[in-house]
Amino acid sequence: MLVDLHTHSTASDGTDSPAGLVVAAVEAGLQALAITDHDTTAGWARAGEQAEMSGVLLVPGAEVSCRVRGVTVHLLSYLHDPDEPVLSQTLAASRDIRLSRARTMAELLGRDFPITWEDVLAQAAQGATVGRPHVADALVAAGVVADRDEAFAGLLADGSPYVVHHGAPHPVVAVQRVRAAGGVPVIAHALAAARGKVVGEEVLEEMVAAGLAGVEVDHRDHTEADRAWLRGFARSHDLVMTGSSDYHGTGKQNRLAENSTTPDHLHRLLAQGSGTRPFGELGALA
Ligand code: AMP
Ligand code: ZN
Ligand code: FE
Ligand code: FE
Image (cartoon, rainbow, N blue to C red; front, side, top):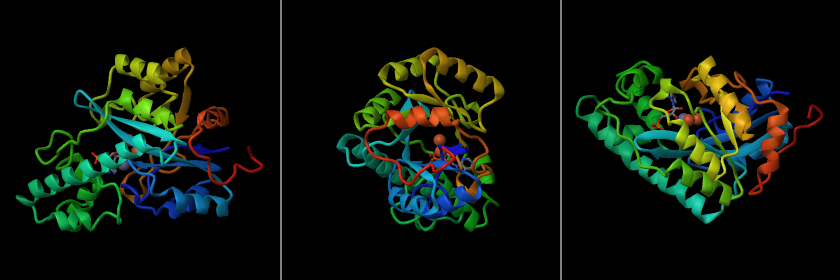
């Protein structure tokens, strides 16, 4: 059985529609996937409908933006209640902050390159969580860079004078809010130093104490040593271990199912979620 628990759609910065994402997952041979758009659950209904038609299991989720002492942490939340007020307000606040921060980046870039805030907005679907990838797409459309990768390697890299970071909840607070909404919190790409600064073991320990359920082990931005360390950490704290693609569609190299989660860990994760039910079914292969 192939399971991919971290993917993005046009509800945030992926390029496949929520339904298209599920179709692509079926084509990639997946029996189960999670939709985990940044700070939104807007893709759940359409992806869920498609999962029911396609005969795959869709685990509804989100990737919650967090920050601690200047370090970005991404917390995957699975199966939380989308109407629980505290978590849904947390996600709504992040979307608002991301919008104003993207606007600032567009204005900074607009001093030196032919792009405007309207150009950036035109790259995001209505209501989507706006992020650097949309700014990148606007730079591509203006002919400033060839693709998202070139933008992220230069003008939009961490530390670039054009990049503004956004405020976000402390990861320990986010873990508590996900649990309080009946969700299952799993830290995404915790040791991916290639993406920027990562948190230390103390923060991970605090997150476990607050109710962290699992760690994403197999992710393309983790080295073999990162994965080995995370496996040991997961074993010593009895955490769920996941593997996933972090698929974003055409703007990023990551392919669906390039990393996957074993069925036993999927079942452990599903058993802990009480905020909402998955869509569709695993079928005979389960
Ligand atoms: P932001 O969260 O707005 O700071 O933007 C960073 C996000 O862009 C990360 O979550 C990445 O997954 C995503 N992303 C999408 N395409 C790319 C790319 N080509 N290179 C790096 N990051 C990317
Ligand atoms: Zn993303
Ligand atoms: Fe992430
Ligand atoms: Fe992601």
